[in-house]
Amino acid sequence: MTESTFSAPSAPSPELTFAGAPSTAEVAPPAAPAPVVVRGKVDRFGVAWGTGRRKTAVARVQVKLGSGKFVVNGRPVEEYFRIERDRQIVEAPLRATDRFGSVDVTVNVMGGGTTGQSGAIVLGIARALEALNPSLHQTLADGGFLTRDSRMVERKKYGFKKARRSFQFSKR
Image (tube, rainbow, N blue to C red; front, side, top):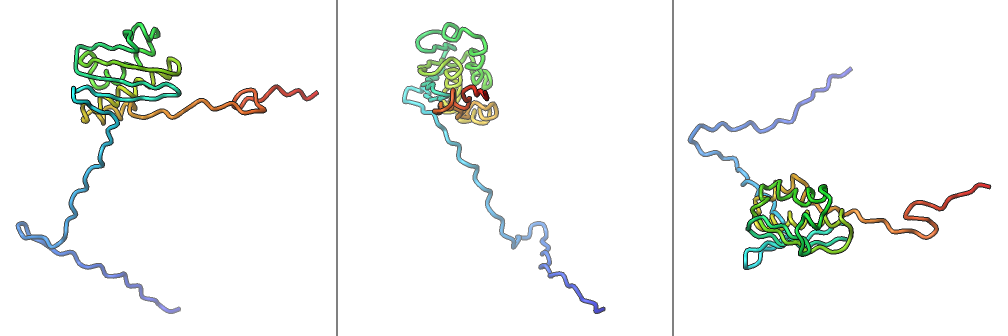
């Protein structure tokens, strides 16, 4: 048997530098943080606008500093959303950012049912709050309020009773 000699590739020896002596190694500049995309707008009156969609519902939300009024389609939120669960869903982005009671929210929502409308309002409020104060982006993103829920109702197919349910099958 023959012996083979393995020689590891020699790496360049590290250079020693003393405190105060300039280093010859190049240091890369720190990478800039990724730009945050703001999907709301602030008009010249200081009113933030945000649009939210969920299922077939579309909500146009306007947020401005105020006393805490919450109006949906010209009616108070307590009157428009009778179910407590829907009201809590709609108020969630305001409570997460500690803005509940300090901003006025006016919403124009159309299409869909109560679940779709409440989801659209949440996204619209979150986008408007982010436009008003971009530092709230992380809080809103952590709560999942800036995520568009893209699920839609699947269409009915011919030859089926519903989207996937087939007609009853009789063997005999």
